Length: 187
Ligand SMILES: C[S@@+](CC[C@H](N)C(=O)[O-])C[C@H]1O[C@@H](n2cnc3c(N)ncnc32)[C@H](O)[C@@H]1O
Image (cartoon, protein in one colour):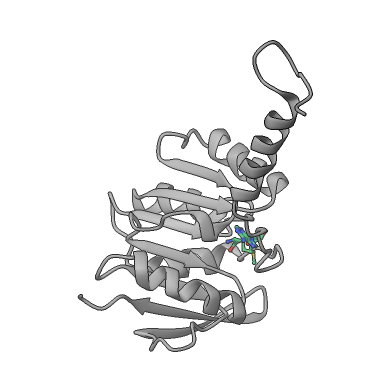
């Protein structure tokens, strides 16, 4: 016998429908922290952007944008537009504050969330400072979404399976850094 929930729906039926609806929602994969927060020194940021040949009007994505230093430099020094994606709400807020303090909110969008969920098909340049495993996880997404001729600039960590178009070693604050430039082939 159905229990009466209100005048129209039996409570048992309401519960069954509710449970069935819940059961149909696929489990959402939990966002994975793919790298710790370490900033790129400013001379390295400048070198990464120069190597990427970022031009005025182009779009740069920084996947794991930290405090927003790469996206703001892309706009100020190259006349580009930029999107920064950052998992940490604290860092995403800090990046947004940097953008606003420099009056760049029309050219830069900060997204707080998982880079794996963000469509990067609009990018001409993708900046990465992650880790080898993270780059490996990201590679199929980049191959699927990026347009022909897009560039990927990765600080310190290679993208396994891709051949860099250029590798440069640069010193900053007495520390040697390696920057890898990749170019997506024409499809
Ligand atoms: C090494 S830091 C680089 C920060 C900045 N790009 C720079 O070069 O100064 C890596 C950043 O990636 C962020 N991160 C890690 N996993 C992420 C994910 N799944 N989605 C978005 N951001 C992530 C971290 O919180 C961290 O701020």
